Image (tube, rainbow, N blue to C red; front, top):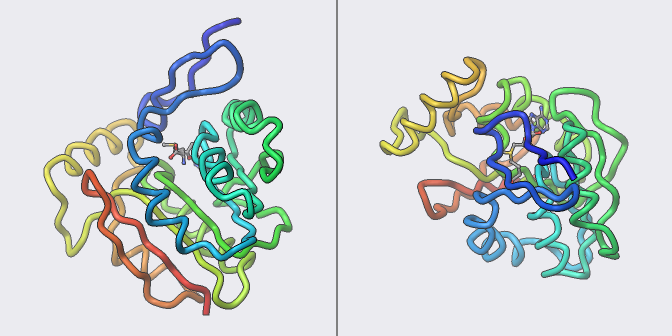
Length: 210
Ligand SMILES: C[S@@+](CC[C@H](N)C(=O)[O-])C[C@H]1O[C@@H](n2cnc3c(N)ncnc32)[C@H](O)[C@@H]1O
């Protein structure tokens, strides 16, 4: 079968496999730290909507680690959705991926938690605003929005994130590492986030719906 790659070398470094599945090295690297922080914060039986699932590996790992969850992956990219579907085929607690552009109209889904890993810096700011708006709409009071990625905090970024930010902006001027303060200000309808430091200068933000 033909080798397949996602469009952007920054948005995902993918390794071709023998089917539609993609392998995202970054997802493998951040898998364990994310699972360790995320899973204890998800209630038993929670419905988890993942935005920007990419390869689908995180959705798979979460669903396998927590069979009680109902996991709904999504991505606006058709090839990503094919990968998600291939990885998650036959896994009972994962639904087929939705075509969800955070900046657009969201499908009618109800969720207890929304997860978005490494998307908001690799999309225009409108995607962050849409993510906040959409998550506020699908979550009930107390529902959680989890965001994972690099951030600029108080105008400061470590050198590795500065370099990453420069590469992102060179590829697309509307991309870039976001300021934590801007993301918090955009989270209308949510309480102030719990901020957890993660490996490689990433943060995991947990917003709770008011
Ligand atoms: C770097 S990948 C991260 C994928 C996955 N979350 C992971 O950590 O492996 C960025 C993903 O964001 C998705 N994306 C880009 N713009 C988006 C938008 N406006 N709404 C939702 N997803 C978007 C891309 O299709 C891609 O799958």
